[in-house]
Amino acid sequence: MNFNQTIERNGPHVVDLRDLDFQRVPIQRYGTQGTPYIKWVKVGMPKINQEILHAVFFLYRNADDARDGVNSQGTGFIVADNDGRSFYGVSNKHVAISVAPVVRINTHDGAEIFDFGPEDWESHPDGDDIAAIELAIDPSKHSVSAIPARLFSHKDNLDLGVGDDVFMVGLFANHEGKEKNNPLARFGNISMLAHESALVPWDGKLFHRHIVDMHSRGGYSGSPVFVYRTFGADLKDRTEYVRMDLSPVAGYLEDDFRHSSQPVRIKVFPETMFYLLGMQCAQFMEPWKLKGAVTIEDQATLRTSDATYLSGSSGMSSVVPAWKILEILNIPKFVARREASLAAVLAARGRRTEPEIDATDGAIR
Image (cartoon, rainbow, N blue to C red; front, side, top):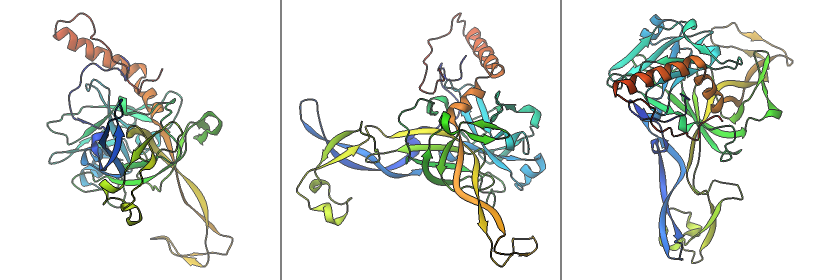
């Protein structure tokens, strides 16, 4: 059973566009026979509802640290196949396998710790910076959401473009939360979409990466990165034009336009776009020149010359594409277990054949 196939859905909340709370404004549209009508469309930067924050968990070196809520090392997030039966934790290999394999997931009254070891996690077959593990999710106990396969952007997704808005949620290491995980959000824009002519090095090999203009820091590795676009934000020629009469809907535009009597033509993206772009994995560093004496927390004062440099973040981050995450979720081991689980369910129901399969946009074909 492919990870992207749909049988049925149950379990925890499934992340989708409704978890972004946008402002809405009215625009004038026309029916197929020219009748004008008002359509309310989403605009601006959304409020991110708690359900999206609930999709992440934190990773620790050991169960004691996880229990005490100290020394958290990175982020992971929960994904679900489209039947809502199988759940996985996804993070970076350099975090979950190399440093911090222990998972802490929020519950309704605290947190639960899964004392995994590095050997419990699966790594990507081609050595990419991705790790995955099966999770036992109990909605009656765990305060979590899951990101479904249908939300994953794929390699040939023509909707995505440079400049699209992105945000990620994950571990801000100085404010992790003691009794429960406390994920924080950061925001930015796509600078480059992954393609064959611009592969990015990692661990001695080259891999596909999206590049985003978004500040990060240690702890956000393994965070889910989402992309969205709303009304008026599309720069592509294929968007449609609509007429908007500013006078009857005054109050949400600048004063200079409120009393215009002339209809205005504006570009509109047909539908609000929302995808999982991928997973935060690294920052691009750059040299920072030091002048004079600099004290760095508990380290000794550095007495430097004008030629001394430190390595600092450039504000540009590297993102593993979502379609690469789907590849690890479709390794034979995971597929076999999903098929066995499905067969058991069908047998219990007395069914001899699989129900109809609905392939989704997230499918890797």
